[in-house]
Length: 267
Image (tube, rainbow, N blue to C red):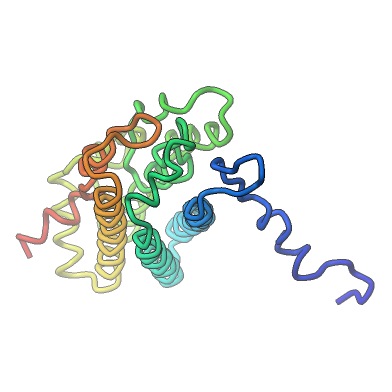
């Protein structure tokens, strides 16, 4: 290492930028602010960092599946699962904040809402849960909208999984392989037939299937904990930014990859 290098822990990790990125909106003229707003900001900034890493890992899984490298793909999915466990655990920290403590600064959030997290929508799109209507919630020129649009039009992890099956002894019809990658994933009898054969006759690829079930379940676990945390904090009130709050969040508690769940009763 160059002894004259100015690189150090602080400059490499941009610690100064990170630690000055918290700007409570409840701050008054004297600089004081509602105590619990700092926790709210830090937790959600950490979520966004983890979302960035999850997207990085999903892209890696796609590359590995396209290269037919199963073992490292399984390990990378395992890393995503561990990250999901971590962000679910962060809900415990948020739940140390009572409804009264949240309401002490909630009005200062104005129109901001977790619903507006571009990166979380990217994760949904990258995994295959795509809705054109969701893009419409993000105006032209908004930071990250272009990446979200690219994710919408690109093959998802599910599409790459289907391609992997087809290349490795489990052929699928063209109607499946050439499906509209911008469409929400629907149950497919053709895919389910192939998956049943995989589980019965291909130990290695069945492990990949189970990893994907773990991932689907892990995301549902995160959604469920998020729903209960919001219900615990604001009850049936409208969400911040005018979202439907708990009612909307409950509607998302569905599996992303229905074929992997549908075959359970046939095995």
